[in-house]
Length: 340
Image 1 (cartoon, rainbow, N blue to C red):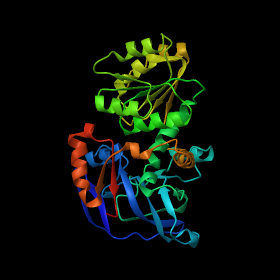
Image 2 (cartoon, rainbow, N blue to C red; image 1 turned 180 degrees about the vertical axis):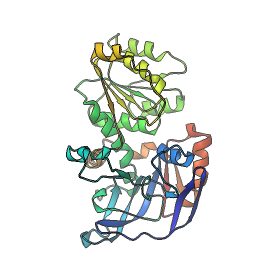
Image 3 (tube, rainbow, N blue to C red; image 1 turned 90 degrees about the vertical axis):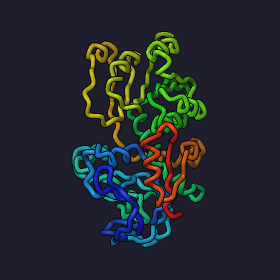
């Protein structure tokens, strides 16, 4: 089978690889579509401490079950599915309290084990979610990034009428905008330094946008909120130096959701956290959010096609990687058509 394999940092190609065989409890999925994520780029650049090379990457994908392993219902052959990449042990403390996305022994499909940039991949049967008959496999491949948005918003525990500030209007920021609306959050502010991304955020429903290169972000937020501050702040830019500003922009009792894996230390002014009794939450991957996302897409509350700026064939992935490396501002989600 053909697959996109990262052999070492900055060393990748599309090449012939052995076809997978399902272990007990697994299924083989014939992949139809897969999305390129920023974390895939981190693997290519050698910035992901969890990956071991060589690795077939890709954790946003959908396809059709073609083979089932021992213990899996044979009736699942032919089922159209999207894949939750979080594989957990079910035994450790996080798993026991319902937080499998931070399992002590967690594996991520496309990081710790081979992923979806391939014609076929084997995955645990429980990670393959059946999709509605009305949903295209290209849309289903984008359930995973929406699950990231659903997770961070759930971690921040929105209240009715809460205003949301999204920092960063890349793909994750845009999924947060759409997911927030699907959850009933209407007053959304988005900030970025790329005007094209801000225009997209407005198209997708942001009420206000702030270009941080042209405006003072904190001053603009104070003006938009009449000095009250922001109840919800989602950090989709993942720049550690921005944390002190987030603490200042948050209103009393505000919640800040952090998504980045940047190891650079952040300055945290304890006074700001305590005097406002702020809540800072980390959000990693998703905690069983696929059913929620699928329901929103089926109901028309989310539009995955709005995220896609480019579609490429599997054989053309190296060129897409180069484009994302050199002109990332020109792209939103690049969707790989595996079967073409």
